[in-house]
Amino acid sequence: MISSDVIRGYNDTIILYLLLGKASYGYEISKNIRKISQDKYVIKETTLYSAVSRMERNGYIKSYYDVGENGKKRTYYLITDKGKDYYHEKCSEWELTKEVLDKFISKNETAEKEEVNNG
Image 1 (tube, rainbow, N blue to C red):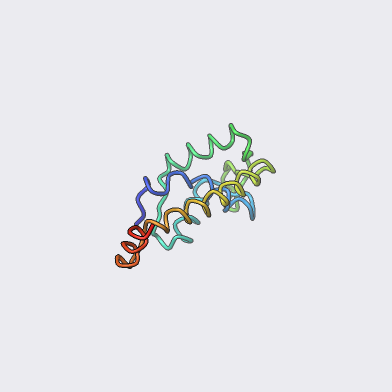
Image 2: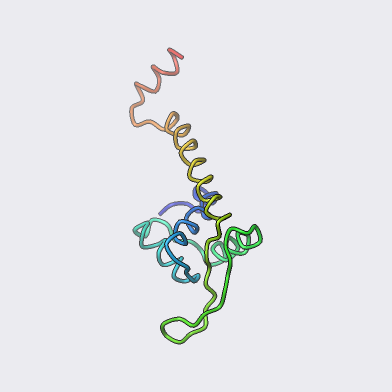
């Protein structure tokens, strides 16, 4: 299971990714995160709802009420154009972050030591 500390900065990205395809409600978002991550990341309810509240305040998503398949009234979230732009920014940031971290995370200690010593 992934530590929430490690992934905290990317909760917005994960949620926005799921909203790219269609509007969704909280429990469905949580369920899809768990499914796609193959149970390696389970977002806490408080984390999810604080993220969607923050993203709504920032204009990245909009919420609306609708009746679901079972007749239950739910709050749905929909990504905005500003949210799509933010998602793409976060994806670029991730690529840079990954590039930097890959320089420090190595399975081959010999190659790692050689690079530092020859640096």
